[in-house]
Length: 188
Image (tube, rainbow, N blue to C red; front, side):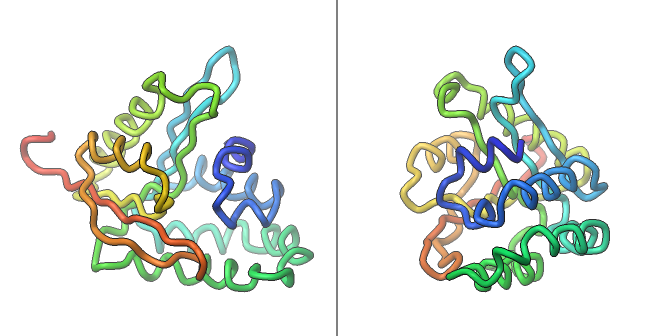
C-alpha cells in the first residue's frame, strides 16, 4: 500500500518523506484500533486501497506514541529540505483541525493503480471502507484531500453520496476539496 501511495499520489507531500516513512504510516493504518484499511488485490498484487481513521486526532496520537521514534529517524535527513518543515508541521497539526467543524472520521489515503482505473475497483473499495466505518459508529466521513484538479475523483465521491464542503489551502501551495458523507437512517 505504501508503494501504491508513493507511485499514484504524486501531488502529496508525505511521499517526500520516503518509502521508510510511508511503510511505517501504512503499518499503523493496518494495525491501529482507530483505523480501517481495505485493499483490492489482483494476482497477489495490491492494486487499490483506502486507509481511513475513525478519529483523526486519536490515530495520530497513537502513531506518535508507537512509531514516533522510528518515523523521526527516517524523516530527519529529509526534514530540512525546502517545504519539508511545513509538511511536517501540517502533519503534526492536522489531527487537531478537520476543518469546517466536520467529522473526525476521515479517509486519509486512497489510491488505485493507474492500470486498474475505470474498472470499479475504487468504488468497491470506498463502499467497503464506508461500511466498515459505519459499523464502527461513524456518523459522517470526510474526504479531506481531493486535489482541486482531480475531477474524476470528485465525480466518483459525489456518486457515492459525498457532498462538497469547501476548498482549502493544503501545504501552502496546493488547494484541495473537502467532501463529506453523512450516514442517515436510509443509508443503513
